[in-house]
Length: 232
Picture: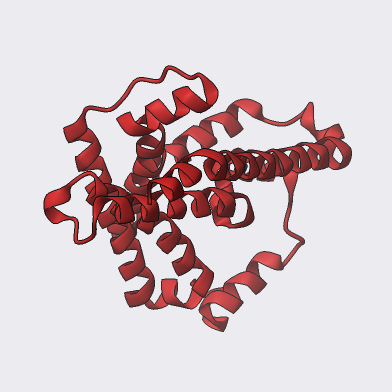
């Protein structure tokens, strides 16, 4: 088992990380190339200050909270916080980044990391429940959306169990191998799923420059999602 763990934490991790970096870099280069070649004439007149303000407001969406979607929006925001903080700043991961990239990052205190991990797991379950139980969300949800949430859930849950032997139902080596392999699968999947918005999010906020709907497209989208009465 130690051989498989060494393989997973060494060459397989490096390969998975490289796939993620190259895939995300490709997304960014394609977005930048599309902006420059197709919309270059509009970039100089773009309202960059308003775009930057909008991007930051959605990154921390306090101003956009609505009572009808308060639970879902809060769970989504906290999920994103945990999905970034734990992989980067967990003490065991900090040692990994130091060995792979030479980065000396600060580590989260153990209690804080545990709390944030549990909160992230709960938020994933809340998002799954919201997509299952809310008719409007269910209508827009595909099987791949549940698959993405599952891809994130497994490494978080297995990592937490591996670090807490009293609640771990499997031998440590088996749970750690599951954690490492599931995390590497997640890294490989990021550029090919909705998780790519980790780098595409800023480009989404460039809608004033990057893309525009054709006249009447909004009404047709509303009708497709909510029925003909949405056009009234």
